[in-house]
Amino acid sequence: MKKILSLILLFFLTLPAFSNVSIYSTENKKFGLKDDKGNIILEEKYKKLIPLGENSYIALKGSKYGLIDKKGNIIIDFKYSHASRILGKFAKLKNYKGFYLFDEYGNNVLIEPYDSIELLFGGMFLTYKDYRYGVVDFEGKTLIDNVCEDIYMPKPNIMRVKYEGNWYEIENVNSETLSLPDDVKNINKNADFKITKLVTSPVAASKYSLVTVTDYSIKVFSSISPAYEATIDELMLSQGAEAVSIFMKIGWLPKFPFVYLKNYYKILRNPLNGPLSDVKEDIKQDL
Image 1 (cartoon, one colour):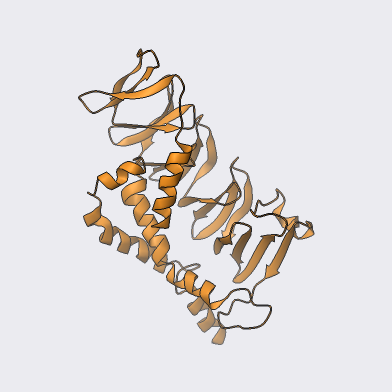
Image 2 (image 1 turned 30 degrees about the vertical axis):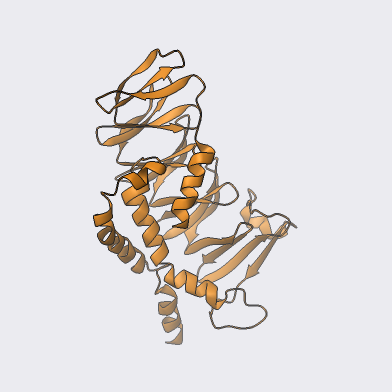
């Protein structure tokens, strides 16, 4: 629910305003573009037009999404089955290979496709591919390769990373928001950052333990949350709809439990970061 409310807030805060171009529609319920004098720039022919930054639109043609500029020129071909906006200026588009990320000019921020791309604090994206997580910045520069079993941020200035079975915490001690430096490998030499190797056992109760029972419970039972969010993305937000209009259409509601179970099962069988992965690892170590 927090994700939906946040997206509604972002919708109002980041809704682009084109000074001389506006979207119009006629009786055929398709959309085009016109200037501030009412002159037609683009005849109405798209099922959806969603402003992206100040220079382009996410457009739906038939059953496929692409990008057009404010003159109506196609800048990304219509070959993607799902589309959503991030921060009002990035387009996350999906085809059979996975998710891609484009800026408002049609530049490919991330060259290769990923299983998922999510927003992080500090001008970063969390990428996920082949059960491994990584981090890139808004320019597409890789900050952490896709080699981690898990990555999450409990606070804006803290990132927790699970790598080769061990948890590490990266904290920017001099900032309220974490922005990783270009050379992450030498982050421990940077006075602004503190790296701590965490005690991974949820019942460990020493002064060195930063992974609390609450944190562990969140990670174990939050398999509910990623499955829920993936379901919301698939049924609602990834259809290219504006956040406000989502609630006006409830055709997705009957599909929700089935899609949710499918996504939960995918998370459950994740060998590296599934809800049972820590339990399996403990059993292996005991044996």
